[in-house]
Image (cartoon, rainbow, N blue to C red; front, side, top):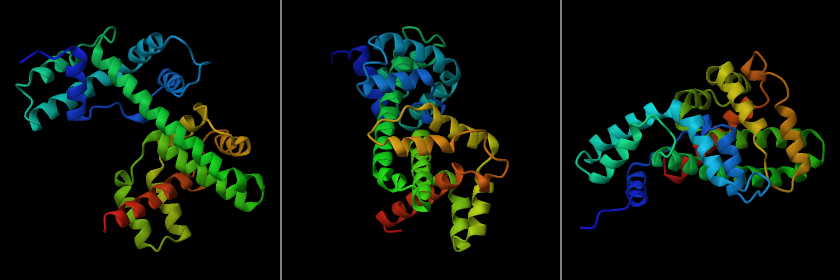
Length: 253
């Protein structure tokens, strides 16, 4: 049997294991690469240099967890004796991101996923543009709903991560008081700052100037002390609740 090339080994192992960097920890270097992948020629013409910068930024923090995840997959998926997995493991054990195929590939994969999230965020803004342009209470609600949906996309949040809190909200008949409790039980200051930072740092595409401005205005300043008064976090949780309902309905649950 012909030995696979390094890119072939890497592609196979990534396909089998699903290894990926969590979207919520990605920095400006990855966002720059995402914009370049989305066709923004202003980002840079030197993709290789951006990938290098992204790897040098992310790999020192994410290398230990990536190695642990690969070790777990090798054990659970019966890959201990797999030559491709062993090859990729050598890269996972290498703390140096320079010329590290795994570190670079995971940066590119993360940027591709972020590029997709940014595109979807642009569509969310475009769909909200008409309502927001009206400038009334409905426009303010549309801006908040758009912000929440975009945060879910950019941070790759999942309703399963907040399953207990969402269930308590539903069991309380989704009352305003229950929504306050949901926000307070899920929105610690660090998480809410993370959400606002992601929302304000991303250059969102699309032909929706008023929606873009309205969503950006929601990120001004520090998060309020009370999560129930956070105009970014409350709609984020409502977006997750809606996503949870859609998932339950589609699965017949």
